[in-house]
Length: 276
Image (cartoon, rainbow, N blue to C red; front, side, top):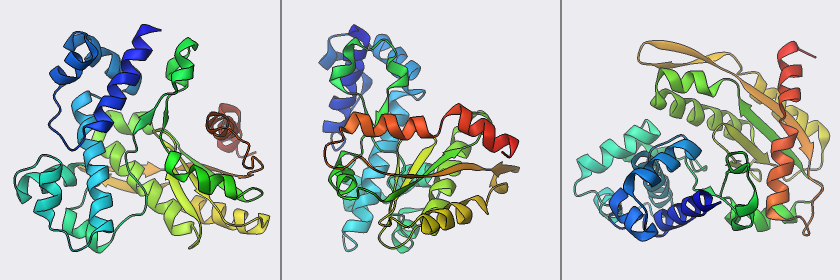
């Protein structure tokens, strides 16, 4: 699986150099492959160009800095990620988050809009590489392991692909809005994170099934409410499911992801659609 190896190396190189100038040429030179090879592979597997991926990762990192260091200037944060002026940084930030950096700082979101993709090296022998791509939530994993017996609230956007076909930025707005719905429902000790392009999780701090059902109900109550993009009113619906997390400290990182993805299966979505 030479191509998968190239992709792993590319993702690692990008993540290690987000605060440095990154060109596709520098990535291909690092990987000793052609520029067109890595561009096509990246687009095929990740459904996004290298350039757009880098911008979104940088703006996700920048959003953390805005919240973590409220006294740090916008120009200083922008320059860290390669932007030489407030205007250039603001344009890039707004293209991803749909708000300016200063507006975001006043009303921050706790989730990371575009976490880095993660592909385990142990999957090099796995031919279904596009089915095993996931995002990196390793920073949360210790917390996840400590919450054995607590409920997870799983959310999945219904029909993100058609929304992306209207505009990739409309898709980003759908993701932001979906995460905000999850955040608004979550309690103060709950953790909200994204596990895929259109999949999200609330890791609760509760073993109470009634509490889990309450969160699900609050999220579902917003289904079919519209987001507005460029004159389009787009209904936004989430499939939502509560599951009890029984993994404990011995659960492997990859097994945790497999469990989450299997819970929001196509069969589950079909039953939701049919109202069963």
